[in-house]
Length: 394
Image (tube, rainbow, N blue to C red; front, side, top):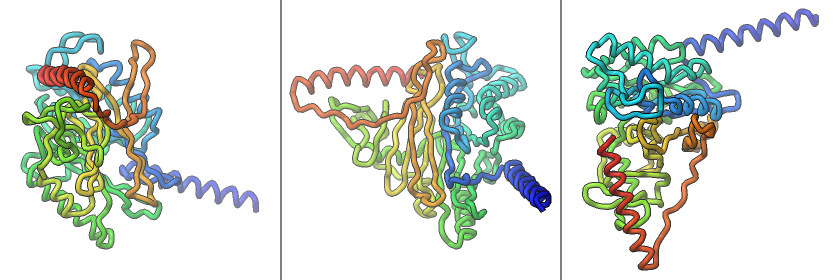
């Protein structure tokens, strides 16, 4: 009898392993037995076939420290071509994959991607990618990008939208313990600026299909894309030039409105705009949050009109920091109350002190004394000038 029970248990375990393997092979994402699902967002690795030591280390220690179920790279995987990196990798003076020969450019892109995705593939973690403006500027066609992505065992990239531009848009469903879709991710291709009307229509149609399959209820979702929508500017408020955190946009000074947002910003976006994409999110009623890269030095989050918006730091070490990542923890039994944390990468490989630190957002300081205001104004003016110069050089 005991022998029979052992045989039956072995058969059940084998069947379980086969089912799990099948799910992985089909690219199916599921909440864990503990009811959690963790997403690691990495943005703007923006490197070439001579990858930066700290960029590779950031990916490695991010995986080790956060143990994600999925990694989302939000664009600018590669740098197209420019002059300016020194001391960050094994080739000084030139940064970029693009050369005059197309086949060699594709080979350079492949080598750069191999480096970026190496630790992910080694860890066996599924990953998704959205296209960035520098990926387009490399000159590599999207059909070749798709061929490249298909070579990675754990890559979930595919093209589902029928837009004439051939942009790479798709969605990833996350299944619950009962096999139903509990959460959804929209991976959108902003090319050089934003999504177009065809992409928005594709999103609305797919969102409606998910809603119908979910008994008429919208499926809670995140949006990941490289370039932000203008709506993130609504997280800012106008301020005086001496106020801590002041940044210039359209000739005025703004800083994060701490009643609705928190984090670190080196630039600002003027408030007051509502994009067509944001209107579509509100119409469909499924998007809980939308998260972007592109600006490299921005690490903040806030809620505007019921939707969380966030900038995530970049990971290109040929440009000034901060550098960092974002980590989400979803809970199957409490989907809307997810954890959203930003980490900054501190130290360096060369110094032997590289590490990730949880970002702790602190409120802006206030100055009541006239002389304190004057000193703050002078210091902030130099800071603003520095940021403008850095922006022009990058």
